Length: 411
Image 1: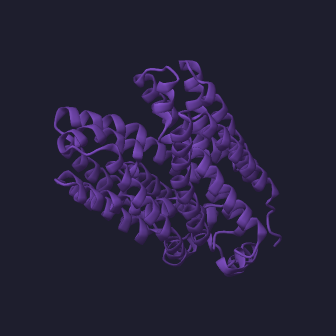
Image 2 (image 1 turned 45 degrees about the vertical axis):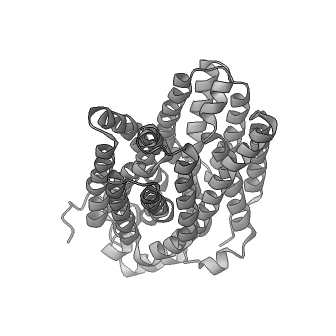
Image 3 (image 1 turned 135 degrees about the vertical axis):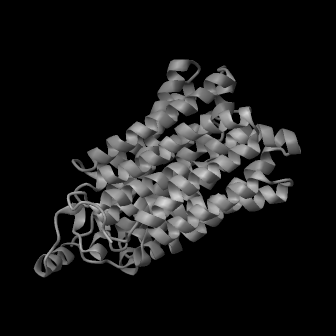
């Protein structure tokens, strides 16, 4: 039953629910887990390697699940996968609040990361693309804004709850946020696509049978089996893997590198906040720009900015340079996440968007796992991150070249 006035396009309700889910999904972010590391390690005596292992395990398993989630989104819609992911995060956070041993932490946080990478990220990212064509950019940008906004709000809130009560109360708070802000709205509001409700893309009005046939002809359903036989699919996919490797090779090592460069730990941590704020602004900016300019060219720009940010980081030994890097890296991270699903929709339509993005997300997550390891290997052998960051900058440039070579398939 449609309880909204007809002048309000229902797609914006779907976007609001997906954005709320992305906001609450901050509970699964490494930037949030960082706040828990010290109090949990002090209570249980866990070392940092033991804590980090759960994040890697969950990400890899989530990557394996992502392609299947994408196909489910195409067939049944994002509501089932979003709600399932949200409930897993709620249960995982509550279990973490009662954790007593390392095995319990592994079970709970691995499940939470699987839900994040394998269910929520895939489903939320493509939801806007199923409901919008003309306004796809701004709709996707709003969903990505939820991602960045969640980290900005939740990190200090978690720290406040820990300081007032303890870390167990903070996990309960995160579980409640996911239930109220993420899971319940997704259950009530998310639907598969406008045609299922007798609506037209972008809220242009109810199509009559002739218009519906014309719309179907304009955007034919292309199966994943056909898509994977195009050269552009593999060029884009490999470019996303490479740029994800490049950008993730910094995150885990950022604070150690900056302190090695002579900055204080406080200044290094503050750079993470600057990065999150610039990412939130970039989500909206890239979303709006993608409606007026080529998403491919914007994505190439994001890749080149990634390389430039690494060059800045290699020489950063003062606050202005550090914050310049943080601004650039925030733009890059959110920009890529915003533009990738838009580019896939432009190239291959929305019929198989979930399937394509599921495979794409899996490739990105593998890159997220490779990058930090590569930087660690270089550091252990040379005692410096300079060689690693230079190599990652070159990887980002090569990824941009591959993306430039990709061509939109002819209709």
